[in-house]
Amino acid sequence: MPPSKRARKGAAPPASSSGAAALTLEGEICALGRQLSDRRRAGKFVDIEVRAGGTIFAAHRVVLASTSDFFSTLFDSGMRDADSNMVILDDVPAATFQSVLDFVYEGRCDIEESMLPLVLEAAARLQVLPLLSAATKATTSRLSAKNALATWAYAERLMLPDLVASARSTALSEFTTVATSDELLSASHAMLCALLADDRCTLQSEETAFEAVVRWLEHQTPPVEEASAIALLGCVRFGCLSPAYTQGRVRSLPLLQTAAGKDMLLDALLSTTKPNARTQPHIEWQTFH
Image 1 (tube, rainbow, N blue to C red):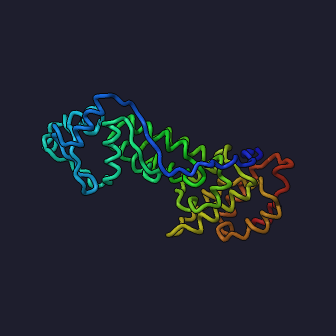
Image 2: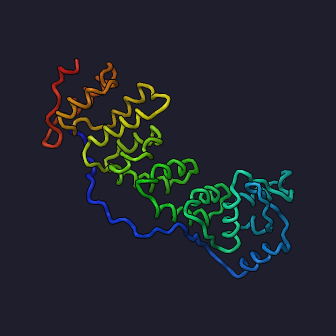
Image 3: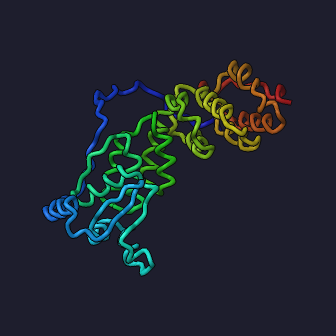
């Protein structure tokens, strides 16, 4: 079969004129929450302390348990820490936990945009579901070629499948830009394979895919094992490359001069059994022996 046609890159939409570096995450808010927040700030009736990033925050146990599945489980666990007056979360930055507290007490928090990944991670870890929803929505609305792969990576780590899907979709639609970005170099082998194997991967030409793979491989330290490197190259649709490019650029790659590389390339070209104007002509088969 001829190689599947990928989406082609069209004109880019106009860039947003917004340069705001701050945003507000909002959830439900009620009068009781405001009153409790005032009492927390005044240190009234607080019965639990949380140490985050080396800073101690006073809070009300019932509020934390009512808004966070993490704290609810901890306080109900019957473990020694359940009755402690101090919960230690030193790996959560103090400013991030302050934002979490603002949200659970007041239903909103104002943060710098650069803090959004940290707040998202804290909301996922502490299972503050309304904050997690708000942070996920804000992250999704800010996806671009510059952050899609990084967002995909941490969304996978946090087990947020909807955000993974959105980040992947953005990377696919913006792959021509992603392919030349520094972000590509930190992508995982699995992510790059998934992008290049997808028919929705938007390219100006298949040469973009090949150059992206070569660039990624050359950047990896230590070098990628030959089998994995060839598997990644196998995601390129060689039948869609021009014969001049294939003869001059593709065959010059040392990895494709190995026995395994030649076999992969030959198999890729032989799989194009019905060449058409988009995929032909192909390299003469005998040149690979």
